[in-house]
Amino acid sequence: MNRHGLRCWDGRRDRGAGRGDGQGEVAAPGVGWAVGTVGIAIAAGSLLGYALTVAVGRLLSPAEFAVFLTFWGVLFGLGSTLSPLEQEASRLAAVARERGTAADRTVLRTLAAGAGVVAVAAAVTLLPAVRERLFPGYPALAVVVLGAAVAFAAQFVVRGLLVGPHEVGRVRVAGRARGRGATRAGRRGRAGRAHRDAPAGAHRRRRLVRLAGIHPGNE
Image (cartoon, rainbow, N blue to C red; front, side, top):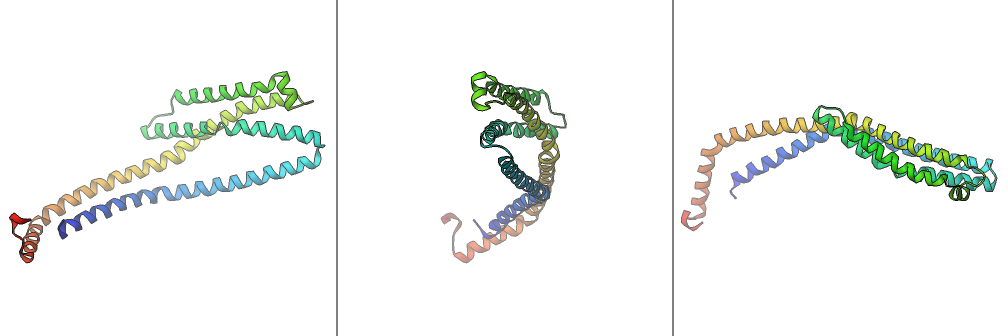
């Protein structure tokens, strides 16, 4: 490839990188704030959970503390399995935002499916044999697990619906809009430069051929 052609190609590559950087500039402030907030929330939640476990261990007897640990593990084990509901609801809300519409009934079906599955799993703890083995002397804890599992499903879906339009949708729409504008401007600029540089480029190529002693038929 000739020198002029290499310069044109590098310019296109640089402009493409510029479009990527522009999108990064749109997404960076929101993403940085979100990551920082989530990181602080996770750290605070972990510390509070550890403090609660230590406090309960000091206040309860060993037998009661064993029941509490079982309840705590079952409750948050079910809750952690529902985290994909938040991701799916966030994705659906972001797609709806890009289309300029509201989230459709797919979100409700997602909520119903997640709540139904976790409710069935939590209902197992209501069986007398399971309940007495997990929570001996505290049958009400099985009901709490069932109610909390359904509440977790609703919480994750609602949180996903709030995150999708306000964070994911806003950043992606802004980034794509800026990218499309830069693409159109880049195309117009490349077309104009190619039209202006065509005669000069042909002259440079002929000069390089003469200097190298290469005949056109032997290239």
